Image 1 (cartoon, rainbow, N blue to C red):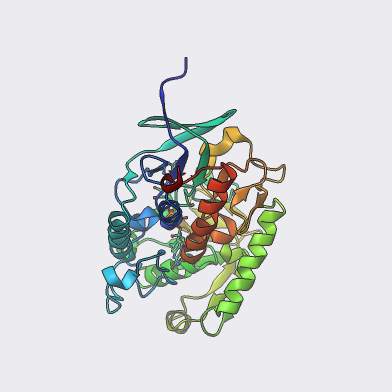
Image 2: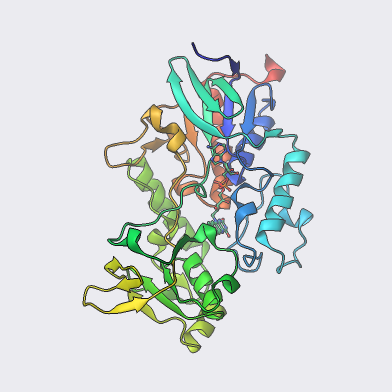
Length: 366
Ligand code: FAD
């Protein structure tokens, strides 16, 4: 027999930028936290995935953390504090935000699985079950690091790490580190590690560097491209794989000058002691650091069978947050909204669309 489940209209899963924005918009439409919707988050404290970012990622080295709706970031974290760790500043901002808008995030509560029960969706967690009419899923990507498969990976006697395991370059002193990946994180970690020890940098494609920061126009083009993909039911692809170029920052120029930006093509296999290319060349290594990105953390939705054959989820709705196969489910912070600004907007689209679809009426007019 099914265990008792708490009945609620909506469950918001995740309290990063996307979940908080969604909760804010639901609240503003007149729906009350803990009565009409609950917000669940598996992390121990406010901050979404930002609380886990490596210590050297500061407000100066992140791209930009966009303000959540209704409250400015620099109200909480002064604009002068460029050297403040992102893992400190963003959680502080989110904590203040949750408090100001009374969003009542339940944590740590991990959603293990969501099942279709006809009229309702059953949301199983490690703190009991919920029975909901709709779901705003805002679980981000941090829980799903992606490492491509290469022959020999199991035989490697050194350590294999992913971006999400990185803390400080000092940990690698005296070791040879292979950094894999051509995205912004790969470059930033290569920069730090190459100042502490010897490195080899490999990427699949020759990285293209571009003068100046992203223009807004460029950003819009990328988002439109990703939106188009998810509306067709294709996997979104990462921003990096869609932009195809990296900003030529002063740090990158300095790396070039000290010879740390010597890119090699991808190796073809991993050996017990390092890596080997197709032509037989070998490089000894103590550490392989995979800066190869993340996938959307959606495993808990697997029983709902939202995916198409090609692995994507067909999205619809004003900002493509609504799942076409099951309109009771919105994915925010997914695909075109996988950025702090996109997550904000996605919450603003998902809240009215989902509550209208379920014909929920706010307390004021009940
Ligand atoms: P998250 O912040 O990951 O929040 C998801 C939340 O869901 C987490 O709190 C997690 O605990 C919770 N959760 C996950 N699974 C479950 C579950 N099963 N049950 C319950 N809770 C769950 N974007 C920018 O716009 N600017 C930047 O400068 C920038 N820098 C970045 C730097 C790095 C290194 C990385 C990896 C990403 C960066 N991004 C940046 C992208 C960034 O991740 C997003 O913009 C945004 O913060 C993601 O918000 P989110 O709410 O979707 O996800």
